[in-house]
Length: 323
Ligand code: UT7
Image 1 (tube, rainbow, N blue to C red):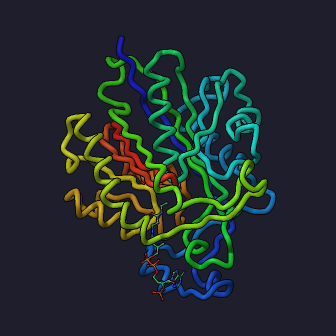
Image 2: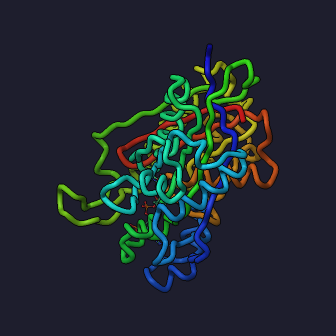
């Protein structure tokens, strides 16, 4: 019996506080015009002082469970992609498991920065295909604002907070009727770690540290690597990348998204873009955009959807699924 990993529900959560580009121009030497022209970002959401990454993740998870018609007791696998965990340990997945009340679940975090959600989806796919787990809750959740250096205009204008979640269930291939994750491609090149990193950590400094990025060097790597990952999953799934219904990219920079669209001969109207309102929410950006597409009726049952991410590591990857 071949098992498929089918996305049966999604949910997302954005903290209510919004920070605009104008707000930022009062903090650092920047302008709405520069941020919009160089990135496409207009505003981002910022978690309240009383909100932790797990709180954002729980809200997204509840909505995903409701959309899939599942209860926490049905979940036997929780994977949380985050770079901004509540604590060094236990994992944010363990904290979310307790808050949701999902005692039967294996729970762990994945750290692949902005590629984290693609890594988590690819990992869940393999767990579900093995037959050992049946119902996965896969979350991308970040309070990235907590690791920003608010005096560094080259990074603090880029990121925001939020969470998104998928329920992914194992289904017999016959019942899945063509639905499911068709292929995933996950890569890392640690030799480029110094292009995007946090300058603190448990073992190195015993501090949390702040995001440091050589943005233009990351930018130069992005389009090529993302496109190659997308072509790899399309080839594995034996589909023409131009035949996808929706492209749900990691939302780091509108110019990167446009570059990938151009390189792969996609159409701009195939893209689900939330960058203007969310900024870069790292591991949360893909499920946030995906859920927006589902909730506003663009992404429908049976659609072919391409996900991609790239971030610190460097890590990059893509996943192709039929909803
Ligand atoms: O999600 C994880 C992966 N991350 C990414 O994919 C990010 C990839 N990189 C990028 O998106 C872009 O490189 C940035 C948006 C980060 C920067 O855009 P850029 O066009 O590459 O700008 P730059 O870093 O080459 O800087 C150009 C100029 C510099 O001034 P000088 O040296 O030319 O005088 C910067 O100091 O823009 C200046 N600058 C700013 N000016 C106003 C940098 N940040 C700002 C700012 N406001 N916030």
